[in-house]
Structure formats: structure tokens, C-alpha cells
Amino acid sequence: ILPGVVVSPASLPGIKRWQVTKKVLESTRIIKWHPNNQKVAFAGGQYNASVIHIYQLEKNKLTLTNILPIAWCHVINAMEWSPDGKWLTVTGSTQNHNKYAKLDIFETKTLTREKSIALATASGNDVQWTQDSQKLYIVERNKISSCSPDNNFELVNEGFKPSIGNTFSKMAFAPDKNLIAFSTNRQKLLIYDGDKKLHKELGNESTGHRWTELRWSPDGKYLILEYSGQHHSLVWNTKTWKQVNEIKPIKFESDWSPDGNFLAIGSPGNPYSK
Image (tube, rainbow, N blue to C red; front, top):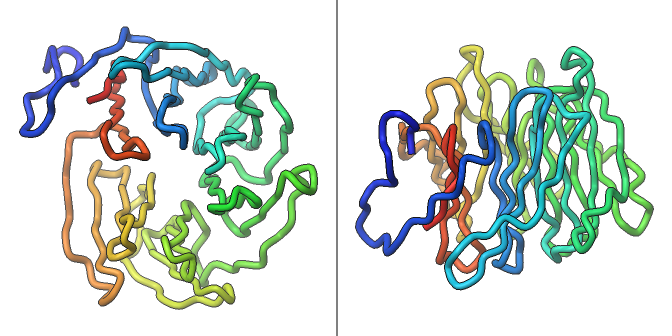
């Protein structure tokens, strides 16, 4: 939906129904489905007024159940549920002139803040859980840290080093766990092996914009990077490591439900799902 341009979701082949929610967020920056397939979180809001809205999916309809204000946050950079569904993690820049960042970890049953961690840099932060939910990785530009529920979420430096002239932005684990991909501030794609050694370096020099999402396909054959500059995506073949496509869609945020039956989409005004 583009408010003022399109008054209802488009008719698309294979789409049975759309549900449009009320305009509850000024803008939707991130959407993440809960692993149980029954909840979806929308993160957004105005600058200096960040908030997370959590919806429950019942009988193919979304119902707003929780509003979680992130009062300290100027802009939310990343949000992830742990694969076991026990934790919701949020990172973003603080309201202090965008100079600092924090990581909040919430216990999902009660949405109680379990831990709040100060980070060194305000931009380029990302968070990714391992599939066993035993470790949370945090991207902090020049380093990659991790923490775990087993050690009270104390940060540990993982030892990854960016190539010369680059800083880390986003990260994603390959489905087979043998490779880890990082995007950088200079539009580079860095691929590391299981020994934390640089395996591949791909991409062009920066034009002043940044990658906003980095995703492997479920079968691991492709890697997709979403680019904020012109709101387009690049698709890489992970066997040949050649770019195979460039997609230039209308800008919106989206996330598939774990069962693949629902797609949650957030426009600059209204979040909706199919």
C-alpha cells in the first residue's frame, strides 16, 4: 500500500485475501514472525518514539495484542525472535544525537526486559541467533560479539575481522551453517567459513547508501541483499558467486511466516498480511 496512491492492496495471482490493519505505526521498519507461526512483530514509529506492535494470528486474522514502547530508541536497527521463541531482541541507536546504541533482550511470555546492553556504535547494528538459540550474535561495525542465555548475556568478542576499508553492517548464517555472510558499509559482501576466515569478497564500492537486509534462500542456493539507496535487491548465486538478478520493487518491509502460508508487509503507513 502507498497511502494516497493505492487505497487497497493489489490483486495478485495466488493471493486469496488481504487484511489491512489500522494505521498503528507511523512507519514500519522491520517485520518478524514468531517461530510458532502465530505471532508477528512490527517495529517502527517516529524518530525518538520507537515502538513494537505484536499481533496474534487466529483464523487468518491479525489482532493487536501487545504494544512494546522502546523509549530510549531513536531508530530501531534490528529485531529478531530466538528460534525457540523464548526471546525477542531489539537493537537501535539512542536519542543522544545518534551516537550510541543499545541492545534490549525481552522474555517473550511476559515481554519483560531481561537485559539491556550498551553497544559501542549506533549505526550498522544487527542481531542474529544460532538455530539452537544458544548464542546471539551482535554486529558492531568493526567487530562481531556474541552472548548467551547461559552466561547471563555477557558479551564475548567472536574475532571476525572486516577486510581493509570495510565495516560490518548485516549478517546471515547459511542454512548448512558452514558459511556466514556479512554486508559492509562499502557495498561489499564478505563470506566467511566456519574457521572465521574470509572466503569470498564480492560487490562494488559504496555510493553513500547501505544494505538493509541480508538473507539466504532456504536451500542455500541464493543470497539476497536489500539496498536502501534505490530500494532494490541483488541476488547472488552461491555456487558460482555471480550476481544473477537485480530487483527494483516499491519500498516496503516484509517477512514470510515460518510455514510459508502468510506474508506480512509494512508500508510507510499500514501493516497488512496475506
